[in-house]
Length: 393
Ligand SMILES: Cc1ncc(COP(=O)(O)O)c(C=O)c1O
Image (cartoon, rainbow, N blue to C red):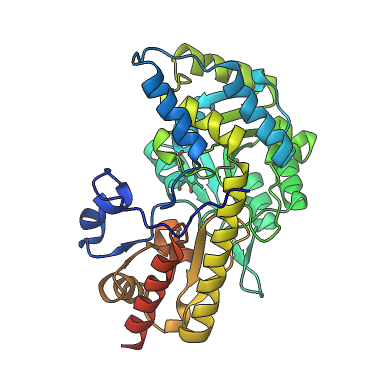
């Protein structure tokens, strides 16, 4: 079996790498280890590179390109085999990114002034898309559990559905930034409530292939008939195979009453026309990337274990909350006894680390930081040493 090298340091300077290029603009300095935006610093599986190179060099005409049959079948097979998510060719379409897909769903299914529920701390563009389109954000905060993790407040969700009549809710499944793999019973309850109160569920499953420590991904649309009836699912190979730059995602809608008009609108506006690179990279990943992904996840678990243990032994004021999915770790820094602003300053100006500061994900994220583990171990080690030195000084 081929062994992939996740220890390799790949210099991303000079590639318009967002993680590096916007440091100065967003963090005010560029001498930071970039550990923020959610892509990984690992080389992709070689079959993806081969598929792209073969297409680019095999024929030098880059005209309009079909989403060929095996592109679709590779998505369908991967989801069925890996996640038990069954859908047909008619039930899936291409969208050029998950946030783009969310914007399309918001614009098609809701109108200005409609309420949309999110569950902070959560991936911050949800609120931006909702508010930016003149819809109203309704927060149903996650609740901390005694064991230091988080859970969904189903009673509060029902109250919101009943009293505020939202048109839609966003399910981040698995949940970024904490890495929660939602249990089927929780999802079934959400689906039943959504059906009862006529709420659509947008399920963002971009991290659904990145399950850790034996946890299993449960696609929302599979948990019950209610779920299939109310859910619009968006997923992607972008986190799975580290190809976010190609903006390749897919959208599945099981309910024909929702799907038919939505997919027709997407089609007529040509919003499902993928660029050539997205098509080839997606098919190659789903067809040939499983072993690479297994090894990548194993490496990520090693990074997380290292950070969790390092914090416990050397930086007790920072607790690394172990995720059940994703390559992101939610750091609880409340034990440092600093204000949120001081924590941000400590990480950026003293430790020289560029992480996402927790309040981006909602007020409950104050005094937390999101740490991207998708880097070679030596980079993660350097980051921890810098953090320890900054805390101790
Ligand atoms: C939960 C979640 N959804 C969506 C995205 C972005 O997806 P895309 O680049 O396809 O819009 C991210 C990126 O970090 C994410 O974490």
